[in-house]
Amino acid sequence: MKKLELKFLNKEGKTVTYSLEKPVEPVDPATIKSAMDEVITQNAFTSTGGDLVSIKSARIVERNVEEIELG
Image 1: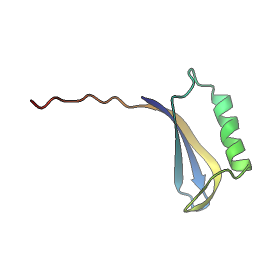
Image 2: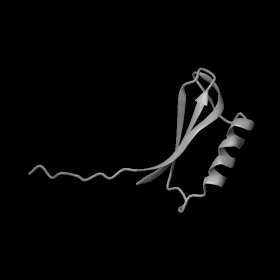
Image 3: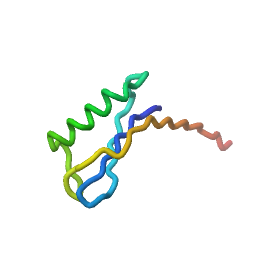
Image 4: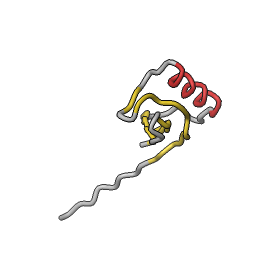
């Protein structure tokens, strides 16, 4: 399963990560940056370390799980 991780810095300088499942691909970096800027502008989320103040990064993460039959 793929997820889009949006990483922000809060007022304390700590990283806050929000994950979105099933991102639209191929991703558009300009659209992602614009959306992240809007999250900060609208003060849409907060964290235990205070409001989000800047963008840190964004990435696609893919996790593969393989069940192991134990007998």
